[in-house]
Image (cartoon, rainbow, N blue to C red; front, side, top):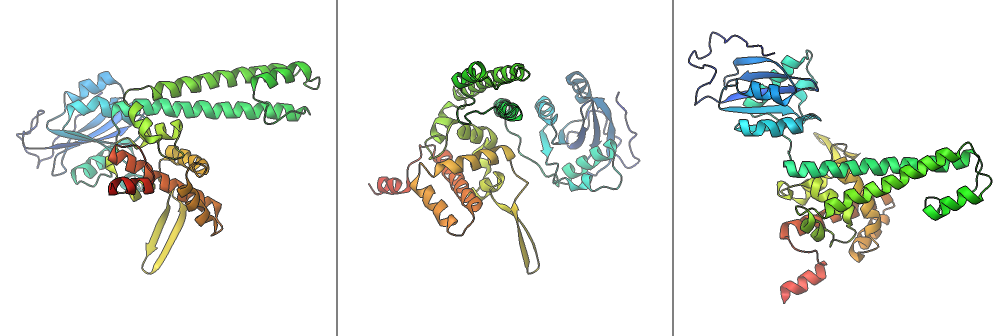
Length: 366
């Protein structure tokens, strides 16, 4: 249900529901699962309208028709922000999404409720203090959802494999660790090993069925993304970088999205979570371990890829060896991962397959 607030005495009486063509209206949204609280302010900070509506497309359509124009809309990033952003984008001059961690004005407030939160977002928007975060295009977000779903499938498959091992160890059954999850060996274990107790046989069969189903689903999801016309050429080009396989290439393409938003490789490395925080004051400088402000999905994939990339590239192996001389293997892995980010960013910018530095210099000289 819409709730209209009365205009203040200082408000322009000519500003009717349609608004003035010269006045920009700033709308702050506090988004929740079932409701959306909103606050509409003009450039002077006067409240034009505020209230609460349901989080449905039908109610949003009804509500946006009553809002003054021109308008700019802002909301905090939540799990629900994506579809609301897409739905409102055609109906406003701009729609912005705020970074929740950097929106300290709300998190640190003494008095906090949905109405106040919406008003503060509107104030941050009109004063140009809104910590805006990047919103990838809809087609990228749709495909990224598929890739993240695949990560969930793999995680559950690993849990099932661990559960199979746990059931065998609980009942004292000896098995070959390297061959356990291969179909032929598992069937041989179930039929020929008398130590497998009858109480765990149904559980083992059920776990094996879930593992097989997860493997097929994993293959289907990755294959569909690799064949996608939007990603096919980009993924092929990224896979020319040493140590970059299909998962790393897809994760980079879908999590990074538009690579031009990074002005330098340092920004890309920071986004991937491959560097630490710095907290400096006066003459005191303190650096913390790996920052928690990062894209955790691409960070995990890059670190795993960096552990294998040194087998394919002498340059990366040299970087790892140099860092290992300082005695910290984790820092060596991070150094390799940072170099891989630089390589992939260079491939993206040049729109060319990756070539080794020596070969690249010889090509330029020729």
